[in-house]
Image 1 (spheres, rainbow, N blue to C red):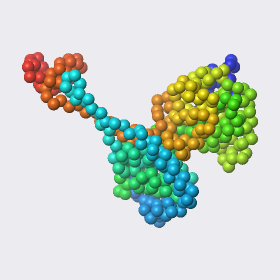
Image 2 (tube, helix red, strand yellow):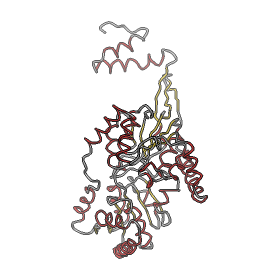
Image 3 (cartoon, rainbow, N blue to C red):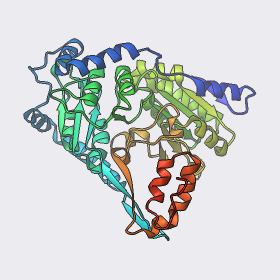
Image 4 (cartoon, rainbow, N blue to C red):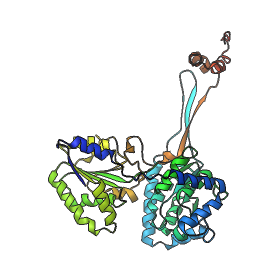
Length: 436
């Protein structure tokens, strides 16, 4: 991992190199993914069956591509009471937070008498991609599906790869709890193609959300425009601001909690105490061997981790804005004061007893967040992602048009759009059309 200090002469160059680092593998999948998409568009279910047999090792039919209601019910019944209660608590808290995001329509009448307004409507159908088969994440199902349901989406179709045809019961239970309409045993680029364009069995959707591997990311990139997508997600990341009053073991495990996602994940510590920085580094080294995913976390920490020593928290806030991290922990005595200075972060966790893992599962705000510095211009998944806005204008009589049309005609004529000008002028009772 890198050690940086803002007082060092070479800090600016070293920090710029950290910002410019490419963590995702530059694998060119454009051509093979395009071929998969073309096959699904041309041959539909037949192509899905072929790709499922090739990549997931089972022939659709036994089991079928669509997960049955009986299988879903059996999965829910198989959960231990404790796990079922945990799933329900998480779903309830996620729903409660997202319920407050519901926007309101509005209408107004301006000084001319023209009525103006905005109306929100839900998307008709959404596709949810869940990665990994038995290694899937039920928390991601809740985080993606619950906001869609709250927005009022009528149909939520979920695709999940099922190696050998088997699925994680907890993922099925989470889907049922979140209000998913249908579940399909399909993974990879072929699932994205099916959701985007439809087959004889699967109706197309309007938007696709959810993380996946490089093939899924490339497929989402290619279908974008024909269908909406959430984002092209990069490797996960966290920036932790911590002072010397913290237990270094707590900071270390929070850094490793991000590093264990995959080798390309990034964990960065920013502190104002060089001695504390060294204690955290030592605590990381001590905790690593105890983790089941030690090899992954070690590679992430070694290749992409960083520890930055700053002069003060004002300086730290400036660095955070340049990093624009997916996750930001503020393990400080007065976290709110520092947070007020920061503009760019996907989600923030304030205080010494608020680790990022709380937000991953149970707190309530969404854990689908902007990565790769895209928090500079993007936000986490929300109810808004499943809604669209329609503005409207109404004139009950000719008075608003009479007041506004002359200016609009002047602008239309200046742009050389004569029919636009005539459309307005023809409706004015005393306006001459000579020369038009």
